[in-house]
Length: 168
Image (cartoon, rainbow, N blue to C red):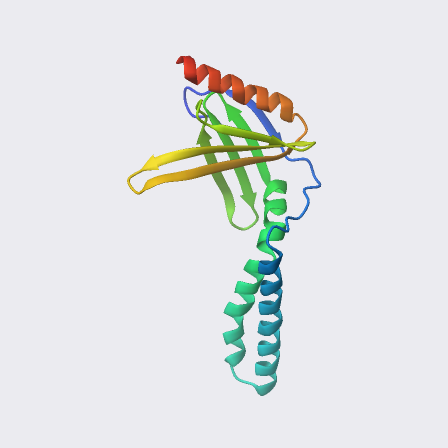
């Protein structure tokens, strides 16, 4: 990861393997599984009858997969494909998706940035509010399962102190 001109790279890391699947909303997952079953039933019957009506089941299949699979396995897959970094001003996440390429997310760290530390190995969640023409929006970055989470948390606190005092 390359910092912007004038920035200093302080830390780079990756998530440790073993992030557990998230099951926050079981009702949504069950509904998604029912949608997948309906779509597969529809597509099977339509294929047996011939023609192209089986294609009408594809949106339902996609919707069901989006509801049942992505919330459960998406964060785990994203954490495995991501690299994390801290500069003297920002937190960065680069996720390299196969076939899609790299996606970058960054957050400027200020004294107002909220940092939650959870678990062992430590997961750090950074939150800040962004004011814009349409009101305030929350911004969140998550560094999953860090082996050196305590060190990273200390670096973030130091960045917050430096930006509060006006130092670079």
